[in-house]
Length: 492
Image (cartoon, rainbow, N blue to C red; front, side, top):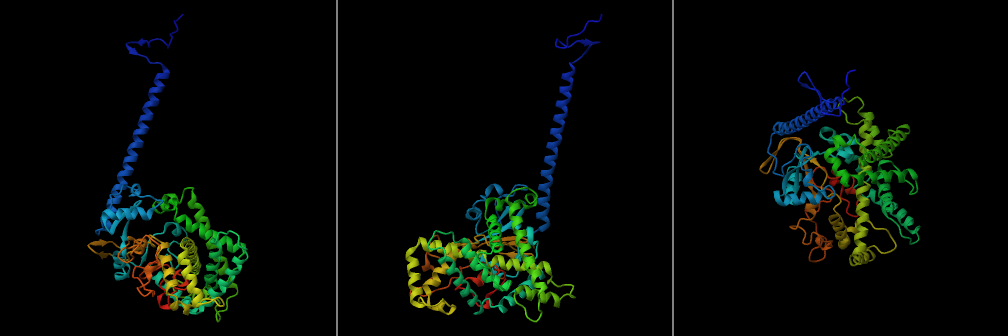
């Protein structure tokens, strides 16, 4: 009988050839396969990184130009490691200390030119207003708007929609005395709502947003909402939610890596759901207007747009069609609600913190207006201290510290640099509002910034809460009483 070999002993030799244990042979093959797979994966990763770097270099060479200096970016992630997404404004201002008032930062793979201080921002947005008139990326909102609507469009579309919106808003009283009556009426509803709380502690967020929103609603929808309307409250919550997301760390991260993150789970998906809900609401309002439209008697902004659509239905180059109507209306509703109500809310907090300022405002109101009538725009000239306080609230509040992203619409020489067409630009409005050359105590709440030696109101070139130039924030500026501008200052 052949002797059975114990494989747990030393391996036998057959014909001078060493024979391994079967499991050892299997293990060797498995290890070899694993090492081969790991090697191939490493090669693939290196190849991908090389391609990304080469594409980045190729893209820069294709763009040409000479961008301002800035920290060296890494492939794909750009300057992410140098930025604190929870405090983006402070991060960028810290970088400006090294590279100066004009520098380049890479948000993920895309380069952005950052402008700091009044001088640099004015040179771009005023002195070279046409070149810097394009709208830059706003990744969260671009998910919905995709270049449609008055606020996020460019080129001929932006020009047509802006011209129409300015004219129509004027027709419905914005920038004129007509808006005064709407504001006074809504202020009355707010007072009644506050009285109804009977002195209880409240969160004023939705009290103020309902009031401000109803002013713009009366223009774009032709009517106001009841303060307890559930659909209205839902609308305001969606608006606030999507707006707040953009200011979070995750929102800033999404701005850098939206091409990947838009496909992943996360809070950005909730923001998308809220934006979609807003669009659905506006679409329903437009459909209601379509069913009851009288071309000879427009009731609101939507009616006016629908009439223009009918007039230009045979124009192949028209920008007056349903998608632009829905998203332009949403632009106006959004800008006319959130920025203004946030400014008012912040203003009340500042007055609570500075009771001496509040007392002076109260005294001026009692002296000029009294207790038996509502304020009017004509009172503005007689109330320099209140005017100064309102301006200082907007300056100190700094609601849009990084501005709204711009884009140069053609190859542009700016200082000693050459910005290729399409280059994005961040005008850092916060750095203008805190420019020590214009404000003696820029980090403090100080109404004297807007008062002269005689206690009269004085303007400041550095007062740019909603930007300057050709495209300041739509709709917000004309609804801020009592500093709403004349109709000649309503650029969208």
